[in-house]
Image (cartoon, rainbow over all chains, first blue to last red; front, side, top):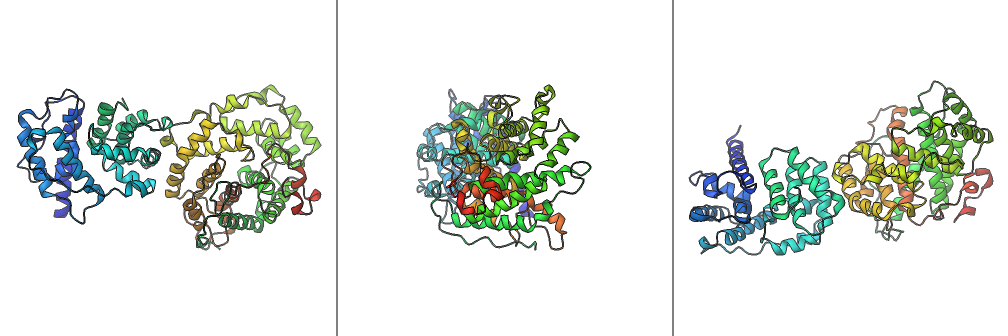
Length: 234
Length: 343
């Protein structure tokens, strides 16, 4: 295995471990959640993992009745700030990555309000593609932004996506048929949030189905988020 | 000739029933598919043992499909030249049945079997009758044994449609049977696989009498199909299952506003062999493939392509679906294909 492949595998493992903890916390199980408890600050891979997880790194704080970051607030905010500093959007950043960066900033402001002074203010990510992409590519991209489907976050984006609900629902069908469980779960999470998802899609059973077809902890995050935040797939 | 061909040149969409169907592309596909079928007419010919020892999947099934789809095209295509082409094929199929005498042999051999009745129904719908067969099916289909439920509800719809075409009393309630099928149950669209997808397309074909009466599609079913057909077409285009894509496009053409998917049609056009045949899936048969193997790899999807291209054309003269097309389908009664232009 090359060094690069080893590095990628190690990062995937760190992300998977963190995602398992996040999914557990979203189900209301395990120890009280803190980002700084599921990722070691001194782990060199932690900033990259936070950047990949995006807003989901803070998702458990969005649960009703969650006490918030509490004593871990400073440490959590420091980890997020490190990730944002290490991987800022550049001219070459894809639209998806720019949106995900934006989502992490937005989540920090929403869930770590006492700790976000001097927070970066990234430019608004490009959004033309939301209207122009054909549904298969739109669905693929939107599934990669599933971490933004959190209560109170990305409200404008949600409004825009509502106009393409049918297209995203077709994307869900396509993704399940391709057995792409990660994409399926990401789209299912958005569809759980959108108000006009067609009933014949069978979203609730679809979410349960996808969850049980895969052991991927990031699939578990998406399905659990759909259940806990938007009441679908229970 | 089995090398892949270039897709027909992309044309500006022209107005059709769906509003934006590319009529020129569709007509090219239908014309070339029918031309291929005409050049392969001998391969649809029945062997002497067709009603005894021959494998019906290699003899009667191709002939039945030729008859069903060429009858539809002969009745419904807006262009007289293509209707005439299809009529020649349909007449050939009737001649192969020895003007129906074949069905007497088949039914005497297997009085409980559905397929001779289904196949005879295709010709009966077009007014091509055989009095001995008419008398025989009246007896066999009146037996209690004929009404024993079949394993496959979609197939039962086919039998019910055949009974209607022949003028026999239906052995079961069409809507009650339909309720058990994919089109009746409207399964989760992400659960469809090849077999259930074919079931669903045939539910639509039997319900609408192969696209002749599209108003029979209930609004809820039409809405379900409108929503999910694009995802299925994309999915099976990805898998390069051209035959199923063709059927799904035929179903698409049965929807109220008949949406036209130019990308899918271009993909089918590009998947054909150099002489206009569409392989069931994947690449065209490689050079050196025997003619018989090429035929069986392509005949069904090529007929489906012609059928779907006819339905997608929209402005069809068979809009009055209940009308029998006997006069137009009987070559002796219709020497001039122009004469039944809007029959």
